[in-house]
Length: 616
Image (cartoon, rainbow, N blue to C red):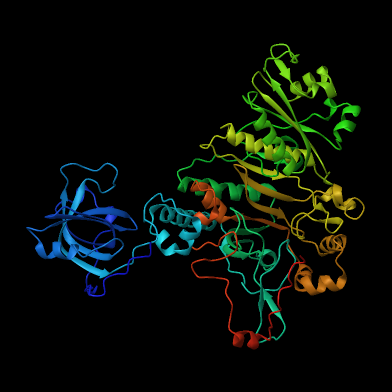
């Protein structure tokens, strides 16, 4: 149904000197008898003849306005013209309701109108402006200015504001100085594609939008700022998902002469206070875990600690002959899913397909406590598994025991089709299954907030594309002192001074103690295969800065969007960003990206090449 056009002969009023006295949603029983002026949108209209009711809404909420035909005929007649989303101002008196509405914050009072001003009319909106609506996200984003009138998006943006405000207060109290770094800088490789900005003045040259202020915040330490922070916009040209946007906001900070625990203390203070803003109690200090332990126990570098179901390596339960038949290479990892022994054949098939889609060679199951003639006694319960013919009854028992399985549990074991240098491929697959099972079995405690510091990351990771070891973080990450001698000879064994902060299975941010010595920085660049010419072209000014007495320093960057998303109880960061882009990287409201005039391209000396069509 097309939007209804407003009547052309509607007579609109001017605001003039009219001044609002109260927000609609702020009126309470204590305001009884007051003369007030409210302004907002018509949320709902109910015409009962002599009495007409308008619910008027502003950012603070809704108040019910009563128009009485007998006592205020002019105001009543004006109210008959009002429709949904018209902009109005109401003059009147607050009276106490005979029967309060417990579902409304202002439900104890009514505003009895003496005068109505219609300040603007409106088309019929494409969706109702209600708390909960059943409409596609694309429609909401296209009409974001209407979507923002709803209480939930407004609440999320208010929470985001309060979180950022509390972060700024906390950083100031701890002696940090907020410094703005450039938006137009030079292109440097930091793990994702840069957004490039052509220069009109310097023909054929480009700026880049910052993926992070990494180099600049290190230079601020060289400049003696000692403690820097910034709430900063960053840009990465990468594929989108629920917790990722092309442009995002982060808390960026850097400290001179820090120990790792000094940075942890700062961030723990920030997060405890940010959580308190959302009514969530977080307790510091946060626990620590080594990267290798997180992978082997949880199959993830951002483990969700709100439930157990830890992984166990069970390779020894598979004899060599069985490994050959099942084509198992590398290690096998397994977990015990509580109460899932009653899973149907279809549910097991679905788990198998999920495992294979993640790169598993196969998935193997043991039902503990299931009755049947082909079951193996485990003492106080039985195990039923098709694996018994391949690995034998004793190994089935060993497999279940290794996972600490109990009556009613389902043991799920997986092997990987391809091994990944430097990590456990089967554990990563099992980690995904752990999360899926934890969700479907209702094991994840939604009211818990589990922070975790992850440390001991490898400095390098293997790139199948480049067939070489590449930097696992950015190339300025510090190296564990005793591992320096392995930098050129055994890069896969080198540990970084990096760390991640994780909350409920979400990575909130990454940081590290940095490389502050020029000789070590150049060694790392060479280990990454960068030539002297590439170093000078990409990092020349930074390498020069390192030669002028760089202090030891370190820092971290936390994702503000992701923090706000989690504390607001949302599943997508688009719900806490005022004007978000879709997963297709489009701003549907502003119709961006869009073509530009040829004149603009000519000024920049740019021609658009026709995109090559994919081969049929």
